Amino acid sequence: MKVAVLDITGKDTGRKVELSKDVFGIEPNDHAIYLDVKQYLANQRQGTHKSKERAEISGSTRKIKKQKGTGTARAGSIKSGVFRGGGRMFGPRPRSYSFKLNKNLKRLARKSALSIQANDKNLVIIEDFNFDSPKTKNFVDVLKALELDTKKSLFVLGGENANVYLSSRNLKNSKVVNASEINTYGVLNANKVVITEGSLEGINTNLSK
Image (cartoon, rainbow, N blue to C red):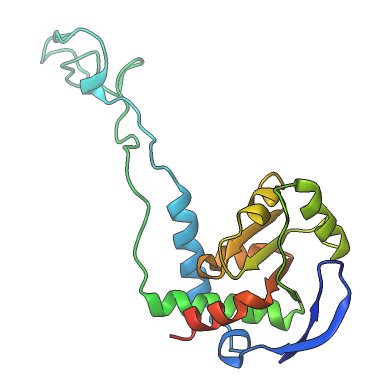
């Protein structure tokens, strides 16, 4: 698959790049995508939820009524969860929601996501670019030139670029990552995936192993 290369003003440079069929042209695996997205969202959860149990409630520990002869259930503490003001029974406890997936499945999921976006014509290839200093306006100008100012976009760079990253950080609909940081959720959550020429080699290397 050949795709035209644009500059940051949105104009065609007259050059084209060949996208690897092994990364951008595979048959998408829906279940691999589901598992990778599920893991990503699970890892975002803090898991700090906690409710007080009967041992953590302040209150008397006396037996509130005699054991037998009342005609109702036995009750040994006012802190029991069956009483108002008592501890919560089987409440949430701090836990980790993360789980493991093998590397081959995660590679398959990311290749599937990129192939879906490529098949839907949602990939944009641009020249490598940089800014002289971090400035949000510079990045907004790039978005407007590419007609992405009203859409969700994911920019994939070939390496660390502090000026571009800092320029995009205040924009909620745009995200900048390195080729090694691509994830399935980020690719599919974007309306357009903007890939720089310099990042293609890194993407192919990371996902073709």
